[in-house]
Length: 448
Image (cartoon, one colour):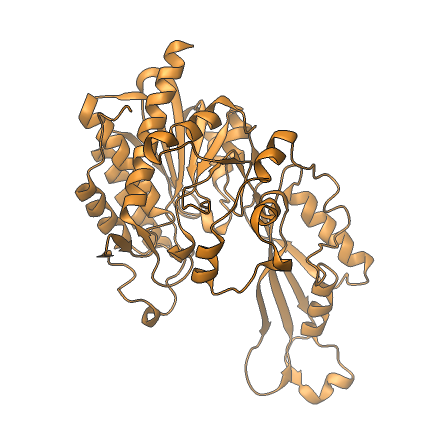
């Protein structure tokens, strides 16, 4: 085991405390700029060259440093976090790091800020131990991940040399039934749309429902034409281009089990869709695209009974290889028009991206998995992707490089809810895993 560099737990907790104390949810421009400034300062204190690039949204922070070997790993991170919601649901102030029984709590500690702090501490540990890095790193931290990364692609195109790397590693994903993180050789893509119906300039009395169309009913009928109660997406051509898993992927998918017990306990669900369990559950999450509704509202809302003047729904689609955001949007528009629902306005929201996919036998993906034996006692199980989206397409497309992601949070981490948490050893191991990846990349390049 190569481990001259060891993360300082005390320093990691200190960094988490600083990052968690800063709110930074979508739409909070000043707060997000403050988080970006703090991250830039942390990167500089770790010996990285830093550039903070403003965007029309949140700044994108890029830190970089060369190493002994001319090989570079790009680390993708995000620092925006969901709103904490009602503070009364939290046991602690969501923006004050808390620790109990080896578990740390705070908004962003398990998804976003926590993994970023772990990786920055890994880089610091390497430099402290050896005075240099075994190979180069580029750390990218954006603040618009939760809104679909609308500015990342353009910045990469504009500053291509700054992002250039030989491989890309992200933090995100799930864990297996034994609690060990999965290694993914890709991530799903994303596209988000609004469906809107406008019927009148003003709300009207409810008694006119016998003669005046209600925009909310129109919207509900439209949604019923998009997806069935058997979870089948009805948009013409939605599934046509999708290819099934390869032979090698099928071999893995027949044997992999997610942490179902942890999910049921943490999420308070009795069963998964259609009673799925075991390998079929993992297979569905890996291979199937999604069509999810996450918002339904009218204008105005509330009392008294009335016919609203407009209604809208927000949908998000997670895409698998050979599906593309704009094609899905155009197919949705054509589908609704063919159903006689051309009054439903379809608006693509900013951002979104195609999926990213590397071969599960790619040498970098295999390396990321294999060094898991030093940290977790065994190589990490490789899946082609999982139930999450990441904008890794931009790096894979721009530089033709392999991508991989390592799971961090647990089912009980509540990354979107109150009391977000993660065992501190999980973050330490996540950082130590990066140390081993950088050592292994340098060794592989030196012997090539």
